[in-house]
Image 1 (cartoon, rainbow, N blue to C red):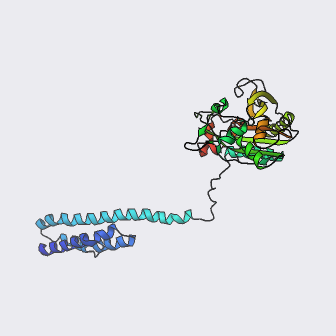
Image 2 (image 1 turned 120 degrees about the vertical axis):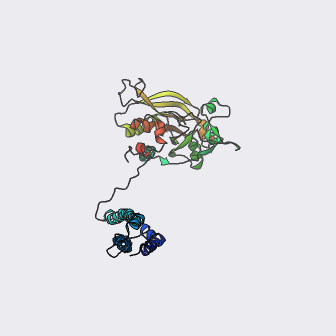
Image 3 (image 1 turned 90 degrees about the horizontal axis):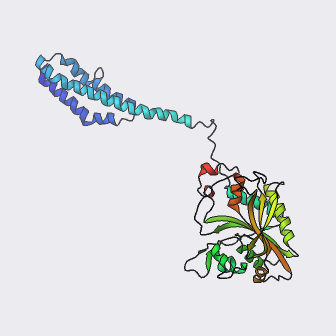
Length: 352
Ligand code: PHE
């Protein structure tokens, strides 16, 4: 066979490959498609296979010149086919595995379960006890007037305890502050409903504090207020005793320490005997044997008067406690910031 013919046929085969069939292999969607192209070139009657078989009949010179071109074409066809086959089998394997992941008879992954935030749990537990003692849930605004946050509570302007409170004043407002305690709810409730009344009020409060392990600029308090005829310090003592025993256990021992708040007189801070060392002195109670729990006192007559309640007829007691403090003591949390960082690895440790 004349070498010229052979060379022309090879050129046509190369044109066929480069002109479309290579692309067909590279983009093939099935193994069959690759096999079709491969067979058309290299099968028993494939165009390239025929040429290669006839190569031996060419004169030696032409064989040397043209042979490598045909071999080169054969190699690129085989390589392209192999590469695409590899890619396809990988995706096909995954397709084939898919039904396994959809097996509806397999037990499912348990969905992650949410829980109540430890502060919410603490508030709810305290609320449960106070409700059982006949106190009603009340709420007040976080943005408060200076009147309710201070004046009604017998804290006049220029009273030094205003400075102690480290108040956030709302810029550009006329006498608005972020409430520094839950006590303003006392005045709001006294004005709203005439005594006798028993209310408690949990909520957020704000102070200009530098944040550290035991301080936060935003924290929570629960306020309690009882006003009726003939209420005195003994009612305060009895109520707090029942309340703290329900919260901390029947063994709990209380200590009333004289203190000062402008809105109560007399005032007392209430400590409980340290539940770790039972009064002996340890790290938790800073060797004092006692842990401070809340502030309290007999409602100052000026508070009642400011709210239009006759102090000659009515009297009452009030108390306020820090929710974070109680939660920290209860779970042995060392850093108040753990409650606000919303790290699920931390929050997940509080059952409920
Ligand atoms: N409001 C006081 C505080 O923030 C606590 C308190 C409430 C004291 C009610 C007495 C009576 O420290």
